[in-house]
Length: 151
Image 1 (cartoon, rainbow, N blue to C red):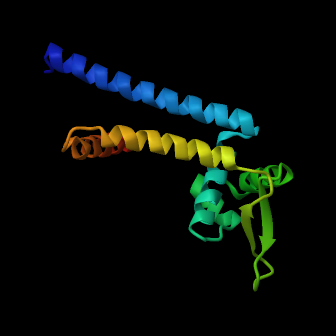
Image 2 (cartoon, rainbow, N blue to C red):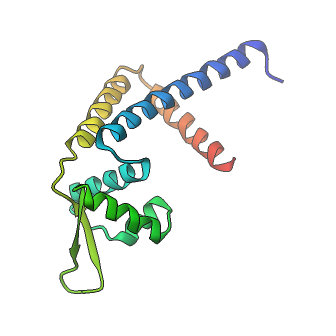
């Protein structure tokens, strides 16, 4: 049985997690609104940026797997993003049946910049943490992920 202090600590931690999640959600919402895309579009573009940064070619099947959506939904999304200029489909150099999906001509710098800005701010917060607390936080977040996945 939890005592009063433990219950209020748990509530404070949960409140802080929900507040962080809400702040991150608000950032993503503003970004989606400014780019005129939906959440899956944004995730696909993030995957394309990661792939480009790692010099990896993605196929529509890769995106389908990453997002966990149907191939029909992927095709519709890629059509929409291609019409908007966010991506291009390019033929595979040796297999006519395959295509690669790459970033298009429309700038995605707002997406890159947003991710970079948030990452730098988070890194600053982590750098200011007392020694040893990062390991405690990593353990806590890992156990929270396991608990969430088990739900």
